[in-house]
Image (cartoon, rainbow, N blue to C red; front, top):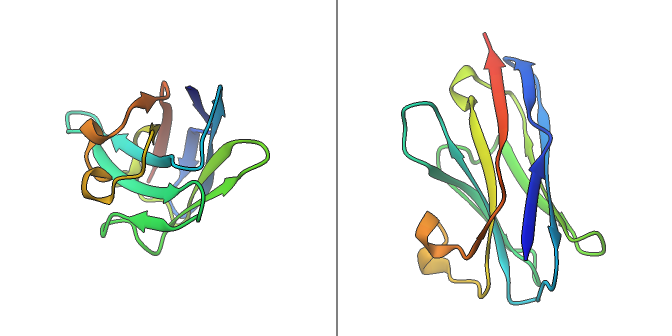
Length: 125
């Protein structure tokens, strides 16, 4: 499985972005797909995830209400919409996939088997 994230860019605070992650290769209903981000000088942190089959969604407390994760099964794509962007949302955003959904490790980057290359989001104040 290969993942490719896109959609980042330079946005003013208060705006929105929709990030995309497209998967290639065999992708199974057991998978979960997550988004993480890494701000300059900080550890990579979990943002959101969803189960591929049921579409159940999970969010970090810090982003719930502004971030929306969704999927397009036919296109094997996962999206992350970010509303009301803040300068502190500036980070490289990564998509990742678990071969078998595991809620216990869903918020840990070590819980994922495949990673995309990241897309940079820069929010200006």
